[in-house]
Image 1 (cartoon, rainbow, N blue to C red):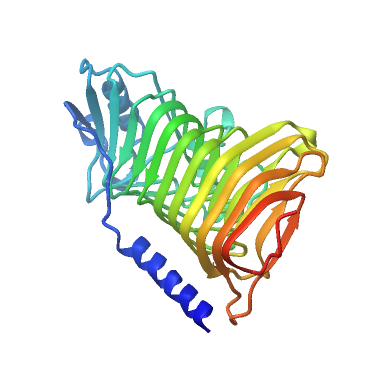
Image 2: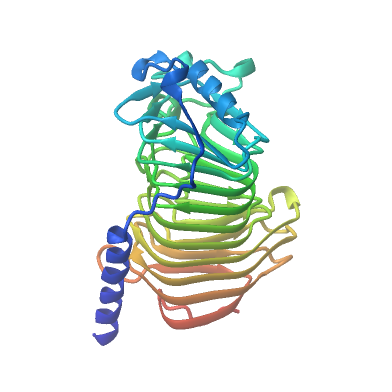
Length: 363
């Protein structure tokens, strides 16, 4: 009884911390401001504002300011845009993108204007060091009709091949595929974002981290049809905390090493998070016969009620086992109150504190 009370109190404490922490919208001082409406954007939700965004970005990226510049999407307006490609490097050391209005995609997949008919990305920032994207706006991909289609579907918002990136405050809703993709970034902070998609939306990962190092993700509320957070290929030094996940597939490392590929993910630490109606909780998956190294991974102070029986899944390759796995103070129970089950194969590490489901040891 005492243990049950302890973990109920822990669950309540973590939930309160996440829900009522002060909202921090990260930004940097700005010298030059470039408002998309000054470049022809109407913001009526119907007119095509793509070219205005392109012009505002070019002015921002080529700004004569050596310190900072900002592209601004003003509040109280809705901007319809087709696929956008914002490429650096930029002249200012710090580039801010302040989004307080809403950005929406075309209503129907047939209306998208994609380069060479390749609709694999909607909004993409590439090679922009010192990028800060923040505000209280919404990125709405109108993905409902995409979900019923086969073939390539666009990721909503991608940042790639950049250093020193911050993202905060935004809401991502009902995007066609992955909501936020972060690729090949060194030094990254994501905080106070909301991702909202139904549990039956296919392949709509919330935050997808690939090839990134020195990453912090905190104070995020994620509901989606796939992994709330997925971490793959070449990522290291990842700190994740104060996440509410559900619906979704939990917080996952992998899958890694498909077709026998070599890969590595290490130094991933997840703590102070709640799974609420997610299909699973903590997951690690590497393909059998792959030479994938997963090491130094911690799940600490995790509570919740997953929908499926397996709250913890750690399935690693027999060729190269997962090592230094730590499970510390975890309470995952099904809705009826019974403890969730677990799947663990070829994993080595330790159990600390009270862990539910009861796992006798990591091999």
